[in-house]
Length: 342
Ligand SMILES: [Zn+2]
Image (tube, rainbow, N blue to C red; front, side, top):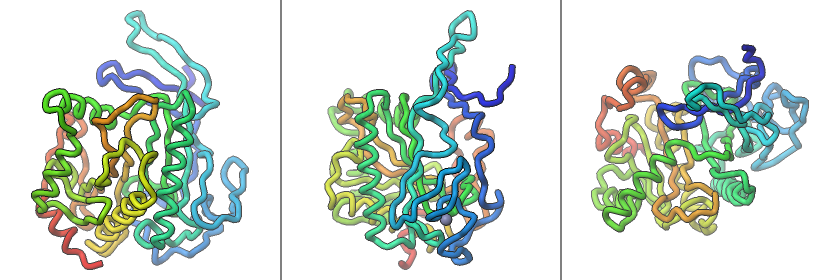
């Protein structure tokens, strides 16, 4: 069976989740070598070879506008797309092996026209502009009947496989809900049924009371290394108001949440004096029209480093067993991040 150009979802009957196959995208561009760190000091404000810089050409032939500030376009190498081929097939007698079209919207959100900046160095006004754009995208995409979930993430650094250092994040709006959101929905629904309370509000209340793992706070948001962190410098940033998604945040709350995200990244970068790699996921409830008032919007940062140049590799217990064996204690790592002078 030829796999060239295969583009579909396959159901994982053991984990009961979709796996997205996008074999048509294996020609996607790489702008940096796949090892080492990218340092912003050595980058120019404009890079003629960068497919995210203003006016430059992209792989499919489109050209970026001469933009300033936030710039959004549909991913040229989408994992999910509205034009994904229709495949709805059962491949086995038991009906366990089935496929579906990888439908959705995949977009790239450039933070700024400046190639040499990043989330920790862009002006505060740019951070606000980025978060306002993420809110607008969430609202716009939630109006599409086939979209169930808007998942936004920023991969930063070559250690997490970033193909281009130009500051940007990505968005996958899909007809399924990502597994970690689903897990949070199950747990928070169970907590609600058992206690009548909000799981996420209880976590925020406990971290606020304990203070020992809080690394930054402002009027509208709080950032902490959670009690149950799996990665050494894992951080969660919660808006203080109860919101299921970006859609309902006020402008002041957007400013507060964005400012705290930037502060966390600045603390990361200050810790080892390097552009700290991480994966940030914007965790929000599904946008399928249902009410998920037991779920709560938050940013979730998972950096792979536990020391400079020492990476935590998810191996046997993590990858195979599914449980993290952590080599560090959250309270100590929170103290390190809190002590960083900004
Ligand atoms: Zn660039």
